[in-house]
Length: 544
Ligand code: F6P
Image (cartoon, rainbow, N blue to C red):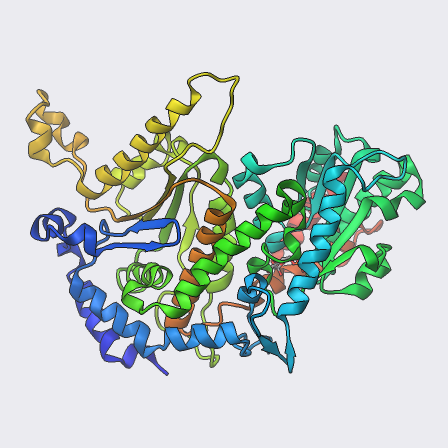
């Protein structure tokens, strides 16, 4: 289907021609019920999206677009295991990872839910042993540090959640996350580690990823050099779908935690890929996180679009990106513990919807996935917020905040009071972005007329605020599922496959060709473009 030919699409194009006239000041003044009508709840999350430049008429056409593109049917198809990842001929069933025991989801004639719970139980047994000090390393010592080696979805989710749930961590167990093939990453992670108390979790869906296998091989050498090769069995476990490659690497498949090809890498933090996280927070808290995911899954698949939180957020993004031509979205958690959340979302959103062809292989004729960026507040206020407030680019922004502080620390008297300051700053930012300060308002107090324009804030900068009572495992699960389904909604409307990532392949292929050219003892014949050839020669010369 060419969605650009639909009535809803045309209507939205017409609305967008008047985007400049959509003034938040007048939208608020004209509708005292606006905030109530534009606030959604799911689980513990309250989502105020009233500060977006959207009228009821725009909303109605966005909902019509979701209906025309059958977002609800596609969600049902995804969750029942249809092979909606058509370019890889795979089901897309991350929602099965949090399905309760007893629910039936059939893939290739088999109910996958019992298998999901079998792996969760195996993870729980293993993590319990490590956490109580019953799993001993080769020299008889309990494990104190877990080093997760993985990249992309095999890193970003676990590290984000490990940071987010810092308050729930086991006091003895610390995790390190090694992803980059830059040797400094592994070197920094092991610099103060005792191999006798270190466990490596090699996380790779395919177990073929160059960065991960390179780091894992160096980590194995580091351990074997100090404790002997036989020690590897007690200090290395794997998380993968590829048992043969795990065995070939030298990890006993009894110590492998598997998942399935129907879990996409960037949708895998609640599969066995979350093993490091479970080691840190325990099986019970991990289960609470899964419950949180499920709350939003159930909401997404059963709620009409108009009340459906992930769907509405997805439609807002479609409005800005495709119709209003706003290229980026900032995600600003006012929570130190969520500082890796923007990086996590970058993969989730940009690897999913950074696509230029439709499901049928035809080029799209409209803008798709936005550039996602951000960092934890309040730091950004003292750097890039200047551009958000007074720059020439409008950046729709998601603010995320918790009512309770993430930390508790008896040694730091008074630190809990910081939280009100943090929240005040968050609320002030969205208020200032939306409503600004007019030249007249500035002139009322500014005595130097030359400064009036400089001190004026145009306002009318859209944002959404997501608030929850506290950053618990369940709330984190809810938040991640909210964004997963938002991304899904966008992908359906745009008609792209949100579950493949062919765009990462060419770089891998070219790097594989370049490696021997960098290390060849004799000057190699080079067949790249002139710039790449020159850079390779320069590198070789400098490396000497
Ligand atoms: O970057 C491409 C990608 O395939 C991601 O989608 C994935 O999360 C990452 O590489 C890691 O892959 P693997 O878990 O197979 O090592």
